[in-house]
Image (cartoon, rainbow, N blue to C red; front, side, top):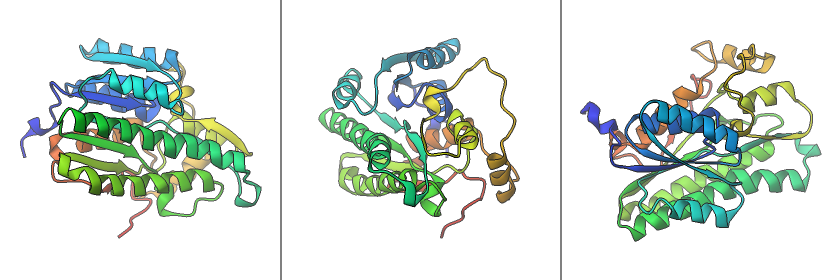
Length: 274
């Protein structure tokens, strides 16, 4: 396989959750590979940081500040692409509570962002690709939580499991249009979202890494939770956003041209499902 299979020159990508964490890393890497990247998030300052990182390397970034649950704003932002080749639906939140303490509003909020936000992103992207007769790649963001029963993560895991089913179903439906749909299911990745999950074990609602990143801040020491996850990995560490972005680039590019409906797990070997 030629190295240029990863070349995205002349292609347009749309990345949700692009203000920090995995979303920012994915947006920057797709731009580095040559794509024009539309970056979406509800954190305008974080988006500015992502755009600065892309433009510093000579890339092109367009910014869209809105909440992923605002379907009208999402539709308008995707339509602004005119032609779309790649959708990376990364935006999400994490909410932690034991099953017996989980409230309806907890589930509703997480499903609205982590499932419906992804569903609507996929719908808008696929519709534009079909309308423009543009073969493309849709990459969703699942989680290692779909492979285990993680205590406290019922809402999060249920939403991510729904994303997996969405990915497989959509892949089966739009493949005839030349559109591939795959999902990335990371293990424990060092992002602001996991930092907040480590430090807050009470019942709370945390926005994804897209909304808490401070590029100028000193890295936090690994928390006890991250240390525990590192010990579970055969590699002896947790992952970094750039390592998940590499999986997004693979699925977005022609390097994965015969791959659709699949789960790619950059998880350090913490889970090894058959």
